[in-house]
Length: 530
Image (cartoon, rainbow, N blue to C red; front, top):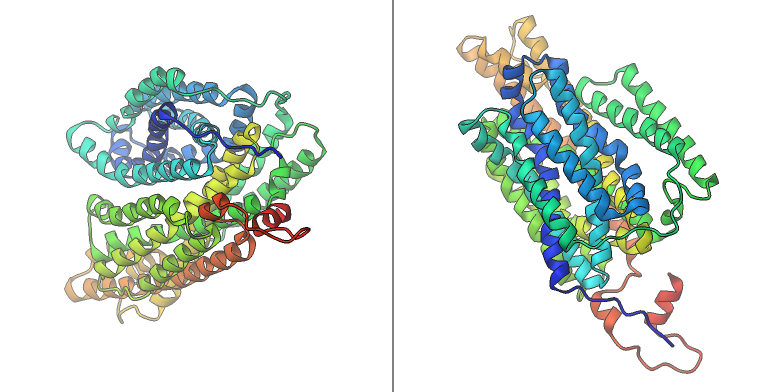
Protein backbone atom coordinates (compact mmCIF):
# COMPACT_ATOMS: atom_id res chain seq x y z
CA UNK A 1 0.00 0.00 0.00
CA UNK A 2 1.47 3.33 -1.05
CA UNK A 3 1.56 6.39 1.13
CA UNK A 4 1.93 9.95 -0.13
CA UNK A 5 4.79 11.41 1.86
CA UNK A 6 4.80 15.23 1.81
CA UNK A 7 7.94 16.78 0.43
CA UNK A 8 9.86 18.70 3.07
CA UNK A 9 10.85 22.25 2.25
CA UNK A 10 14.53 23.12 1.97
CA UNK A 11 16.66 26.25 2.15
CA UNK A 12 15.18 27.71 -1.03
CA UNK A 13 11.64 27.58 0.36
CA UNK A 14 12.60 29.17 3.68
CA UNK A 15 14.43 32.00 1.89
CA UNK A 16 11.35 32.32 -0.31
CA UNK A 17 9.25 32.68 2.85
CA UNK A 18 11.42 35.64 3.86
CA UNK A 19 10.67 37.19 0.45
CA UNK A 20 6.94 36.56 0.93
CA UNK A 21 7.13 38.33 4.30
CA UNK A 22 7.76 41.62 2.45
CA UNK A 23 4.30 42.05 0.90
CA UNK A 24 2.64 40.80 4.10
CA UNK A 25 4.41 43.45 6.18
CA UNK A 26 3.66 46.15 3.65
CA UNK A 27 0.00 45.17 3.34
CA UNK A 28 -0.42 45.46 7.12
CA UNK A 29 1.59 48.68 7.30
CA UNK A 30 -0.59 50.34 4.69
CA UNK A 31 -3.69 49.47 6.68
CA UNK A 32 -2.45 51.02 9.93
CA UNK A 33 -0.09 53.84 8.99
CA UNK A 34 -2.77 56.05 7.46
CA UNK A 35 -4.47 56.72 10.79
CA UNK A 36 -1.37 58.58 11.96
CA UNK A 37 -0.86 60.40 8.65
CA UNK A 38 -4.49 61.40 8.05
CA UNK A 39 -4.39 64.76 9.91
CA UNK A 40 -1.18 65.76 8.08
CA UNK A 41 -2.28 64.80 4.59
CA UNK A 42 -5.73 66.33 5.16
CA UNK A 43 -4.12 69.62 6.05
CA UNK A 44 -1.70 69.40 3.12
CA UNK A 45 -4.38 68.58 0.53
CA UNK A 46 -7.30 70.42 2.08
CA UNK A 47 -9.43 67.25 2.27
CA UNK A 48 -12.98 67.58 3.54
CA UNK A 49 -14.45 65.25 6.17
CA UNK A 50 -16.15 63.10 3.53
CA UNK A 51 -12.95 62.95 1.47
CA UNK A 52 -11.01 61.88 4.56
CA UNK A 53 -13.41 58.97 5.06
CA UNK A 54 -12.95 57.86 1.45
CA UNK A 55 -9.16 58.20 1.69
CA UNK A 56 -9.26 55.95 4.75
CA UNK A 57 -11.88 53.42 3.65
CA UNK A 58 -11.43 52.94 -0.10
CA UNK A 59 -8.34 50.77 0.41
CA UNK A 60 -10.15 48.28 2.62
CA UNK A 61 -13.26 48.34 0.44
CA UNK A 62 -11.31 47.39 -2.68
CA UNK A 63 -9.27 44.74 -0.90
CA UNK A 64 -12.27 42.98 0.63
CA UNK A 65 -14.30 43.17 -2.58
CA UNK A 66 -11.62 41.63 -4.81
CA UNK A 67 -10.01 38.97 -2.63
CA UNK A 68 -12.14 36.12 -3.96
CA UNK A 69 -11.65 37.23 -7.56
CA UNK A 70 -7.90 37.60 -7.19
CA UNK A 71 -7.51 34.30 -5.35
CA UNK A 72 -9.26 32.47 -8.15
CA UNK A 73 -7.40 34.47 -10.80
CA UNK A 74 -4.13 33.34 -9.20
CA UNK A 75 -5.25 29.72 -9.57
CA UNK A 76 -5.75 30.37 -13.29
CA UNK A 77 -2.78 32.51 -14.35
CA UNK A 78 -0.28 31.51 -11.65
CA UNK A 79 0.17 32.72 -8.08
CA UNK A 80 3.69 34.04 -8.55
CA UNK A 81 2.69 35.91 -11.71
CA UNK A 82 -0.29 37.52 -9.94
CA UNK A 83 1.90 38.41 -6.94
CA UNK A 84 4.47 40.15 -9.15
CA UNK A 85 1.79 41.99 -11.15
CA UNK A 86 0.28 43.15 -7.87
CA UNK A 87 3.69 44.19 -6.54
CA UNK A 88 4.38 46.33 -9.60
CA UNK A 89 0.96 47.99 -9.33
CA UNK A 90 1.37 48.48 -5.58
CA UNK A 91 4.74 50.19 -6.02
CA UNK A 92 3.43 52.49 -8.76
CA UNK A 93 0.29 53.37 -6.79
CA UNK A 94 2.39 54.03 -3.65
CA UNK A 95 4.47 56.59 -5.57
CA UNK A 96 1.30 58.12 -7.01
CA UNK A 97 -0.23 58.39 -3.53
CA UNK A 98 2.92 59.99 -2.11
CA UNK A 99 2.92 62.74 -4.73
CA UNK A 100 -0.85 63.29 -4.95
CA UNK A 101 -1.80 66.91 -5.55
CA UNK A 102 -5.49 66.72 -4.61
CA UNK A 103 -7.80 64.64 -2.39
CA UNK A 104 -9.42 63.13 -5.49
CA UNK A 105 -6.04 61.96 -6.79
CA UNK A 106 -5.17 60.42 -3.44
CA UNK A 107 -8.52 58.60 -3.28
CA UNK A 108 -7.86 57.18 -6.77
CA UNK A 109 -4.35 56.08 -5.78
CA UNK A 110 -5.67 54.46 -2.59
CA UNK A 111 -8.21 52.58 -4.71
CA UNK A 112 -5.38 51.30 -6.92
CA UNK A 113 -3.45 50.31 -3.79
CA UNK A 114 -6.50 48.33 -2.68
CA UNK A 115 -6.72 46.54 -6.03
CA UNK A 116 -3.02 45.70 -5.81
CA UNK A 117 -3.34 44.70 -2.16
CA UNK A 118 -6.09 42.23 -3.02
CA UNK A 119 -3.55 40.30 -5.13
CA UNK A 120 -0.83 40.22 -2.48
CA UNK A 121 -2.43 38.37 0.43
CA UNK A 122 -4.12 35.42 -1.35
CA UNK A 123 -1.07 34.99 -3.59
CA UNK A 124 1.25 34.99 -0.58
CA UNK A 125 -0.73 32.52 1.50
CA UNK A 126 -1.38 30.17 -1.43
CA UNK A 127 2.33 30.17 -2.34
CA UNK A 128 3.17 29.30 1.26
CA UNK A 129 0.70 26.42 1.08
CA UNK A 130 2.28 25.11 -2.11
CA UNK A 131 5.88 25.59 -0.99
CA UNK A 132 5.41 23.89 2.39
CA UNK A 133 3.62 20.59 1.80
CA UNK A 134 4.77 19.05 5.08
CA UNK A 135 2.05 19.87 7.69
CA UNK A 136 4.55 20.68 10.44
CA UNK A 137 6.58 23.01 8.23
CA UNK A 138 3.42 24.58 6.85
CA UNK A 139 2.28 25.30 10.39
CA UNK A 140 5.52 27.14 11.14
CA UNK A 141 5.38 29.04 7.84
CA UNK A 142 1.78 30.17 8.45
CA UNK A 143 2.72 31.21 11.98
CA UNK A 144 5.44 33.39 10.45
CA UNK A 145 2.86 34.77 7.99
CA UNK A 146 0.49 35.69 10.84
CA UNK A 147 3.33 37.21 12.86
CA UNK A 148 4.43 39.40 9.94
CA UNK A 149 0.90 40.69 9.45
CA UNK A 150 0.47 41.39 13.16
CA UNK A 151 3.90 42.99 13.41
CA UNK A 152 3.23 45.22 10.43
CA UNK A 153 -0.04 46.39 11.94
CA UNK A 154 1.68 47.15 15.25
CA UNK A 155 4.67 49.06 13.93
CA UNK A 156 2.75 50.96 11.26
CA UNK A 157 1.70 53.87 13.53
CA UNK A 158 5.20 54.04 15.05
CA UNK A 159 6.99 54.15 11.69
CA UNK A 160 4.41 56.65 10.48
CA UNK A 161 5.02 58.86 13.50
CA UNK A 162 8.79 58.82 12.98
CA UNK A 163 8.46 59.64 9.25
CA UNK A 164 5.99 62.45 9.86
CA UNK A 165 8.28 64.05 12.41
CA UNK A 166 11.08 64.25 9.83
CA UNK A 167 9.45 64.31 6.37
CA UNK A 168 6.25 65.33 4.60
CA UNK A 169 3.07 63.22 4.72
CA UNK A 170 3.78 61.46 1.41
CA UNK A 171 6.78 59.67 2.92
CA UNK A 172 4.48 57.12 4.61
CA UNK A 173 3.43 55.88 1.16
CA UNK A 174 6.95 55.76 -0.29
CA UNK A 175 7.79 52.89 2.07
CA UNK A 176 6.10 50.61 -0.43
CA UNK A 177 8.32 51.44 -3.40
CA UNK A 178 11.68 49.88 -2.34
CA UNK A 179 9.93 46.87 -0.78
CA UNK A 180 8.05 46.13 -3.99
CA UNK A 181 11.17 46.65 -6.10
CA UNK A 182 13.00 44.08 -3.94
CA UNK A 183 10.09 41.65 -4.33
CA UNK A 184 10.10 42.09 -8.10
CA UNK A 185 13.82 41.27 -8.20
CA UNK A 186 13.86 38.35 -5.76
CA UNK A 187 10.45 36.85 -6.54
CA UNK A 188 11.23 35.33 -9.96
CA UNK A 189 14.44 33.81 -8.57
CA UNK A 190 13.24 32.38 -5.26
CA UNK A 191 9.50 31.78 -5.64
CA UNK A 192 8.13 28.83 -7.63
CA UNK A 193 5.10 29.16 -9.89
CA UNK A 194 1.86 27.30 -9.23
CA UNK A 195 -1.41 27.30 -11.14
CA UNK A 196 -4.43 25.09 -11.67
CA UNK A 197 -3.85 23.37 -15.04
CA UNK A 198 -7.55 22.53 -15.35
CA UNK A 199 -8.81 26.07 -14.68
CA UNK A 200 -11.08 27.56 -17.32
CA UNK A 201 -12.06 31.11 -18.15
CA UNK A 202 -12.82 33.66 -15.46
CA UNK A 203 -16.59 34.17 -15.16
CA UNK A 204 -17.00 37.96 -15.36
CA UNK A 205 -20.63 37.82 -14.20
CA UNK A 206 -19.48 36.12 -11.00
CA UNK A 207 -16.77 38.76 -10.57
CA UNK A 208 -19.40 41.51 -10.86
CA UNK A 209 -21.71 39.72 -8.41
CA UNK A 210 -18.91 39.27 -5.86
CA UNK A 211 -18.09 42.98 -6.04
CA UNK A 212 -21.77 43.92 -5.82
CA UNK A 213 -22.17 41.67 -2.77
CA UNK A 214 -19.10 42.47 -0.67
CA UNK A 215 -18.68 46.18 -1.40
CA UNK A 216 -22.14 47.39 -0.22
CA UNK A 217 -22.10 44.93 2.68
CA UNK A 218 -18.79 46.20 4.07
CA UNK A 219 -19.71 49.81 3.28
CA UNK A 220 -23.03 49.45 5.06
CA UNK A 221 -21.55 47.86 8.15
CA UNK A 222 -18.86 50.53 8.39
CA UNK A 223 -21.53 53.22 8.03
CA UNK A 224 -23.65 51.67 10.77
CA UNK A 225 -20.62 51.59 13.05
CA UNK A 226 -19.77 55.26 12.47
CA UNK A 227 -23.19 56.89 12.12
CA UNK A 228 -25.60 54.50 13.85
CA UNK A 229 -28.74 52.81 12.57
CA UNK A 230 -29.33 54.64 9.30
CA UNK A 231 -31.91 53.25 6.81
CA UNK A 232 -29.46 53.84 3.95
CA UNK A 233 -26.75 51.71 5.50
CA UNK A 234 -29.26 48.99 6.38
CA UNK A 235 -30.33 48.95 2.73
CA UNK A 236 -26.68 48.57 1.69
CA UNK A 237 -26.19 45.62 4.02
CA UNK A 238 -29.41 44.02 2.80
CA UNK A 239 -28.48 44.58 -0.85
CA UNK A 240 -25.09 43.00 -0.27
CA UNK A 241 -26.68 39.93 1.32
CA UNK A 242 -29.22 39.61 -1.52
CA UNK A 243 -26.55 39.81 -4.21
CA UNK A 244 -24.40 37.40 -2.19
CA UNK A 245 -27.25 34.87 -2.30
CA UNK A 246 -27.43 35.29 -6.08
CA UNK A 247 -23.65 34.83 -6.26
CA UNK A 248 -23.82 31.56 -4.33
CA UNK A 249 -26.64 30.25 -6.54
CA UNK A 250 -24.61 31.01 -9.67
CA UNK A 251 -21.53 29.27 -8.29
CA UNK A 252 -23.55 26.11 -7.69
CA UNK A 253 -24.68 26.02 -11.33
CA UNK A 254 -21.33 26.75 -12.98
CA UNK A 255 -19.03 23.95 -14.09
CA UNK A 256 -16.04 26.24 -13.39
CA UNK A 257 -17.15 28.59 -10.59
CA UNK A 258 -15.29 31.68 -9.43
CA UNK A 259 -15.53 30.33 -5.87
CA UNK A 260 -15.47 26.57 -5.40
CA UNK A 261 -18.18 26.00 -2.79
CA UNK A 262 -17.07 22.37 -2.48
CA UNK A 263 -14.33 23.70 -0.21
CA UNK A 264 -16.99 24.26 2.46
CA UNK A 265 -17.80 20.56 2.40
CA UNK A 266 -14.82 20.01 4.70
CA UNK A 267 -15.73 20.35 8.37
CA UNK A 268 -12.24 21.68 9.16
CA UNK A 269 -12.51 24.30 6.41
CA UNK A 270 -16.03 25.39 7.37
CA UNK A 271 -15.37 25.52 11.11
CA UNK A 272 -12.09 27.41 10.66
CA UNK A 273 -13.77 30.00 8.42
CA UNK A 274 -16.53 30.59 10.97
CA UNK A 275 -14.04 30.73 13.83
CA UNK A 276 -11.74 33.20 12.08
CA UNK A 277 -14.67 35.46 11.18
CA UNK A 278 -16.02 35.55 14.74
CA UNK A 279 -12.56 35.94 16.25
CA UNK A 280 -11.81 38.80 13.85
CA UNK A 281 -15.06 40.41 14.91
CA UNK A 282 -14.32 40.46 18.63
CA UNK A 283 -10.66 41.35 18.11
CA UNK A 284 -11.40 44.34 15.85
CA UNK A 285 -14.26 45.62 17.97
CA UNK A 286 -12.35 45.56 21.24
CA UNK A 287 -9.15 46.88 19.60
CA UNK A 288 -11.10 49.97 18.55
CA UNK A 289 -12.41 50.46 22.09
CA UNK A 290 -8.98 49.88 23.66
CA UNK A 291 -7.37 52.45 21.35
CA UNK A 292 -10.05 55.02 22.23
CA UNK A 293 -9.65 54.21 25.93
CA UNK A 294 -5.91 54.84 25.76
CA UNK A 295 -6.32 58.19 24.04
CA UNK A 296 -9.54 59.62 25.48
CA UNK A 297 -9.70 58.08 28.96
CA UNK A 298 -6.04 57.60 29.88
CA UNK A 299 -5.08 60.70 27.87
CA UNK A 300 -2.26 59.28 25.75
CA UNK A 301 -1.15 60.74 22.42
CA UNK A 302 -1.73 58.62 19.27
CA UNK A 303 1.94 57.62 19.23
CA UNK A 304 1.91 56.73 22.94
CA UNK A 305 -1.27 54.71 22.43
CA UNK A 306 0.39 52.88 19.55
CA UNK A 307 3.35 52.03 21.74
CA UNK A 308 1.11 50.61 24.48
CA UNK A 309 -0.65 48.46 21.88
CA UNK A 310 2.65 46.76 21.01
CA UNK A 311 2.61 44.30 23.97
CA UNK A 312 -0.68 42.88 22.69
CA UNK A 313 0.71 42.55 19.17
CA UNK A 314 3.86 40.88 20.50
CA UNK A 315 1.61 38.46 22.39
CA UNK A 316 -0.14 37.52 19.12
CA UNK A 317 3.25 36.83 17.55
CA UNK A 318 4.28 34.77 20.58
CA UNK A 319 1.04 32.80 20.52
CA UNK A 320 1.35 32.19 16.79
CA UNK A 321 4.95 31.03 17.00
CA UNK A 322 4.25 28.78 20.02
CA UNK A 323 1.38 27.06 18.22
CA UNK A 324 3.48 24.69 16.03
CA UNK A 325 5.25 23.51 19.19
CA UNK A 326 1.99 22.94 21.06
CA UNK A 327 0.32 20.92 18.30
CA UNK A 328 3.20 18.44 18.41
CA UNK A 329 1.60 16.94 21.52
CA UNK A 330 -1.86 18.52 21.80
CA UNK A 331 -4.63 18.23 19.24
CA UNK A 332 -5.30 21.47 17.34
CA UNK A 333 -8.86 21.73 18.66
CA UNK A 334 -7.63 21.92 22.25
CA UNK A 335 -4.80 24.33 21.41
CA UNK A 336 -7.34 26.64 19.76
CA UNK A 337 -9.79 26.25 22.64
CA UNK A 338 -7.11 26.85 25.27
CA UNK A 339 -6.02 30.03 23.53
CA UNK A 340 -9.58 31.29 23.27
CA UNK A 341 -10.20 30.62 26.96
CA UNK A 342 -7.13 32.73 27.74
CA UNK A 343 -8.51 35.38 25.38
CA UNK A 344 -11.88 35.26 27.13
CA UNK A 345 -10.09 35.89 30.44
CA UNK A 346 -8.39 38.88 28.81
CA UNK A 347 -11.72 40.29 27.64
CA UNK A 348 -13.18 39.87 31.13
CA UNK A 349 -10.13 41.62 32.58
CA UNK A 350 -11.13 44.70 30.56
CA UNK A 351 -14.31 44.93 32.64
CA UNK A 352 -12.13 46.00 35.60
CA UNK A 353 -11.02 49.16 33.78
CA UNK A 354 -12.81 52.23 35.07
CA UNK A 355 -13.21 55.78 33.90
CA UNK A 356 -10.16 56.87 35.88
CA UNK A 357 -7.73 55.42 33.35
CA UNK A 358 -6.56 51.95 34.40
CA UNK A 359 -3.73 51.57 31.89
CA UNK A 360 -2.13 48.49 33.45
CA UNK A 361 -5.40 46.55 33.55
CA UNK A 362 -6.16 47.21 29.88
CA UNK A 363 -2.61 46.41 28.74
CA UNK A 364 -2.69 43.12 30.70
CA UNK A 365 -6.07 42.23 29.22
CA UNK A 366 -4.83 43.05 25.72
CA UNK A 367 -1.79 40.80 26.21
CA UNK A 368 -4.01 37.86 27.21
CA UNK A 369 -6.29 38.53 24.24
CA UNK A 370 -3.33 38.65 21.89
CA UNK A 371 -1.74 35.46 23.15
CA UNK A 372 -5.07 33.65 22.98
CA UNK A 373 -5.66 34.85 19.42
CA UNK A 374 -2.38 33.45 18.08
CA UNK A 375 -3.42 29.77 17.96
CA UNK A 376 -6.76 30.21 16.17
CA UNK A 377 -5.21 32.61 13.67
CA UNK A 378 -2.30 30.32 12.84
CA UNK A 379 -4.17 27.02 12.99
CA UNK A 380 -7.36 28.37 11.41
CA UNK A 381 -5.47 29.58 8.35
CA UNK A 382 -3.46 26.36 8.32
CA UNK A 383 -6.58 24.16 8.44
CA UNK A 384 -8.23 26.15 5.66
CA UNK A 385 -5.17 25.81 3.43
CA UNK A 386 -4.60 22.18 4.39
CA UNK A 387 -8.20 21.29 3.51
CA UNK A 388 -7.82 22.53 -0.07
CA UNK A 389 -6.17 20.75 -2.97
CA UNK A 390 -2.95 22.47 -4.14
CA UNK A 391 -4.61 23.68 -7.34
CA UNK A 392 -7.34 25.38 -5.26
CA UNK A 393 -4.93 27.10 -2.88
CA UNK A 394 -5.68 30.55 -4.33
CA UNK A 395 -9.41 30.21 -3.73
CA UNK A 396 -8.83 28.85 -0.23
CA UNK A 397 -6.44 31.65 0.72
CA UNK A 398 -8.87 34.25 -0.61
CA UNK A 399 -11.59 32.85 1.63
CA UNK A 400 -9.21 32.88 4.60
CA UNK A 401 -8.44 36.56 3.99
CA UNK A 402 -12.07 37.46 3.35
CA UNK A 403 -13.10 35.99 6.70
CA UNK A 404 -10.66 38.39 8.38
CA UNK A 405 -11.96 41.44 6.55
CA UNK A 406 -15.57 40.43 7.16
CA UNK A 407 -14.81 39.91 10.83
CA UNK A 408 -13.28 43.38 11.10
CA UNK A 409 -16.35 44.96 9.50
CA UNK A 410 -18.66 42.99 11.79
CA UNK A 411 -16.59 43.81 14.86
CA UNK A 412 -16.62 47.55 14.36
CA UNK A 413 -20.33 47.37 13.55
CA UNK A 414 -21.50 45.01 16.29
CA UNK A 415 -19.10 45.58 19.22
CA UNK A 416 -18.62 49.27 18.38
CA UNK A 417 -22.37 49.91 18.08
CA UNK A 418 -23.08 48.05 21.33
CA UNK A 419 -20.47 50.06 23.23
CA UNK A 420 -21.83 53.30 21.74
CA UNK A 421 -25.40 52.43 22.74
CA UNK A 422 -24.34 51.63 26.31
CA UNK A 423 -22.26 54.83 26.47
CA UNK A 424 -25.19 56.99 25.38
CA UNK A 425 -27.59 55.32 27.80
CA UNK A 426 -25.13 55.64 30.67
CA UNK A 427 -24.15 59.27 30.16
CA UNK A 428 -27.78 60.45 30.08
CA UNK A 429 -28.11 59.51 33.75
CA UNK A 430 -24.68 60.77 34.83
CA UNK A 431 -24.35 64.26 33.32
CA UNK A 432 -23.62 66.82 36.04
CA UNK A 433 -26.59 69.10 36.90
CA UNK A 434 -26.48 72.39 35.03
CA UNK A 435 -24.50 71.11 32.05
CA UNK A 436 -25.24 73.45 29.09
CA UNK A 437 -27.51 71.90 26.45
CA UNK A 438 -24.94 72.22 23.66
CA UNK A 439 -22.21 70.53 25.72
CA UNK A 440 -24.64 67.81 26.84
CA UNK A 441 -25.62 67.13 23.24
CA UNK A 442 -21.98 66.79 22.17
CA UNK A 443 -21.28 64.48 25.11
CA UNK A 444 -24.22 62.22 24.24
CA UNK A 445 -22.90 61.76 20.71
CA UNK A 446 -19.50 60.35 21.63
CA UNK A 447 -16.63 60.49 24.08
CA UNK A 448 -14.70 62.56 21.54
CA UNK A 449 -17.52 65.12 21.62
CA UNK A 450 -17.49 65.12 25.40
CA UNK A 451 -13.73 65.75 25.53
CA UNK A 452 -14.08 68.69 23.13
CA UNK A 453 -17.06 70.11 25.03
CA UNK A 454 -15.30 69.76 28.39
CA UNK A 455 -12.44 71.97 27.24
CA UNK A 456 -14.94 74.77 26.58
CA UNK A 457 -16.45 74.70 30.08
CA UNK A 458 -14.96 76.39 33.13
CA UNK A 459 -13.11 74.43 35.82
CA UNK A 460 -15.32 72.06 37.80
CA UNK A 461 -18.04 71.97 35.13
CA UNK A 462 -15.63 70.72 32.49
CA UNK A 463 -14.02 68.22 34.88
CA UNK A 464 -17.42 66.87 35.90
CA UNK A 465 -18.55 66.42 32.29
CA UNK A 466 -15.30 64.71 31.35
CA UNK A 467 -15.44 62.37 34.35
CA UNK A 468 -19.03 61.37 33.58
CA UNK A 469 -18.21 60.73 29.92
CA UNK A 470 -15.18 58.60 30.77
CA UNK A 471 -17.19 56.52 33.23
CA UNK A 472 -19.89 56.04 30.57
CA UNK A 473 -17.28 54.97 28.02
CA UNK A 474 -15.90 52.44 30.52
CA UNK A 475 -19.44 51.04 30.81
CA UNK A 476 -19.54 50.65 27.02
CA UNK A 477 -16.13 48.96 27.06
CA UNK A 478 -17.35 46.54 29.72
CA UNK A 479 -20.43 45.61 27.65
CA UNK A 480 -18.36 45.00 24.52
CA UNK A 481 -15.81 42.98 26.49
CA UNK A 482 -18.45 40.72 28.04
CA UNK A 483 -19.94 39.97 24.62
CA UNK A 484 -16.44 39.32 23.23
CA UNK A 485 -15.68 36.91 26.09
CA UNK A 486 -18.92 35.02 25.43
CA UNK A 487 -18.15 34.78 21.70
CA UNK A 488 -14.59 33.58 22.42
CA UNK A 489 -15.99 30.85 24.68
CA UNK A 490 -18.46 29.89 21.95
CA UNK A 491 -15.70 29.58 19.34
CA UNK A 492 -13.70 27.43 21.78
CA UNK A 493 -16.68 25.09 22.20
CA UNK A 494 -17.19 24.97 18.42
CA UNK A 495 -13.52 24.08 17.87
CA UNK A 496 -13.66 21.22 20.38
CA UNK A 497 -16.92 19.90 18.93
CA UNK A 498 -15.92 20.04 15.26
CA UNK A 499 -12.13 19.76 15.16
CA UNK A 500 -11.26 17.32 17.95
CA UNK A 501 -10.86 14.48 15.43
CA UNK A 502 -7.78 16.18 13.91
CA UNK A 503 -4.70 14.51 15.43
CA UNK A 504 -1.65 16.17 16.91
CA UNK A 505 1.64 15.99 15.05
CA UNK A 506 2.80 13.17 17.31
CA UNK A 507 -0.35 11.15 16.60
CA UNK A 508 0.04 11.66 12.86
CA UNK A 509 3.58 10.24 12.86
CA UNK A 510 3.07 7.48 15.44
CA UNK A 511 3.07 3.91 14.05
CA UNK A 512 -0.36 2.24 14.19
CA UNK A 513 -0.91 -0.02 17.16
CA UNK A 514 -1.51 -3.68 16.57
CA UNK A 515 -5.18 -4.60 16.38
CA UNK A 516 -7.16 -7.79 15.88
CA UNK A 517 -8.09 -8.69 12.33
CA UNK A 518 -10.96 -6.61 11.02
CA UNK A 519 -10.58 -3.91 13.69
CA UNK A 520 -9.35 -0.49 12.61
CA UNK A 521 -6.72 1.35 14.63
CA UNK A 522 -7.33 4.89 15.79
CA UNK A 523 -5.42 6.58 12.97
CA UNK A 524 -7.03 4.57 10.21
CA UNK A 525 -10.49 4.97 11.68
CA UNK A 526 -9.88 8.70 12.04
CA UNK A 527 -8.85 9.05 8.42
CA UNK A 528 -11.93 7.16 7.26
CA UNK A 529 -14.23 9.32 9.35
CA UNK A 530 -12.75 12.36 7.66
